[in-house]
Length: 433
View 1 (cartoon, rainbow, N blue to C red):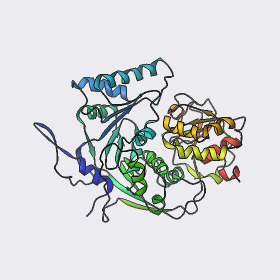
View 2 (view 1 turned 180 degrees about the horizontal axis):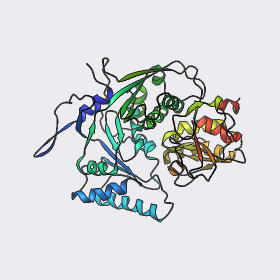
View 3 (view 1 turned 135 degrees about the horizontal axis):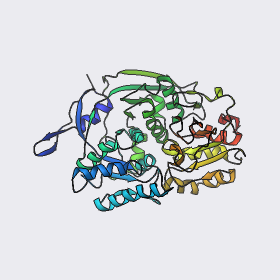
View 4 (view 1 turned 30 degrees about the horizontal axis):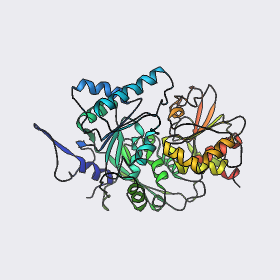
């Protein structure tokens, strides 16, 4: 019996503990779902919310330094630029730790971006890697053919000190997408539809392996969006096979060697789900769960107060191009606040060079420096009582973006931009004829 992609990557990272310390196995270990293993990590990530907890726990370990200063990544993106004194202290703690321990990849204001857009862009996460982060959306990097997953801040502290984590090998669900994508349908719609089919716990502690002819034609931005939201189905990781699209993306960015792993043809999957996308419309997830997905044509008359386009889910240049295509020559509805958040400084600069920023500002949108701010109800777009937002972010839980009696509707950039123009949740073809 063969192995899934997740099993292959984890098996290649398993280590043995001995009295003399940790020694790597000379060859990949064969692992099976349910096995508890210790594995060496390639990247350890934390941000300005989660890192300070990790750093306090790190200090309790009594070690002098991190296991490898080039494999730790610290990103100030949630409350940066700092919104108040408390967030300033959080970022200061991370800054001081990075300087004291010689952390190479510390991204502060001016260099930082939204972490899950930034790391792939910078070539810090690569195919075949085992990546852990103190953020649930670390699963984003599975789009590159890596095993990436979120962990608690205490686990991350130990990983920073030792380079080792323990985990239980997950079962894998395989999703096969067939057919032809309709106009305006992209990765966000595929994953919202999928979560709508299996529920927010449909892949609980399972690896989600995305395959099929539709996936083969999907851009890296679309793949990153899908892997990003694997956690919204309860997934431990969301992985794509490495193909020419992956290699083209990675080769421009990689600064170190990497290994490509492939699932075996006779791999044992817990479940195989086939999805024909031919009749799929752009999707909208209604409050208060990502599983409440429905076609935009069935949204009804949902008036909105705010439209947010960005985040680690849809803050890449391709997403901004889609939004600009719809907003070009139009105006944001006078009752709507439209907030655009480029995912990184590089995305921002390229959008500026392409004229996208001009399009947004002329339309009446506000363009923010890269930040996670409104996604978690932190700053730069918090909702008041009774307000509604359509957002390209990944969660719409009660109070996620502000007041507990506000509402968040999840969608892709096309629907979010079209809705900003009309003032209600709208299919993009209603705005772009």
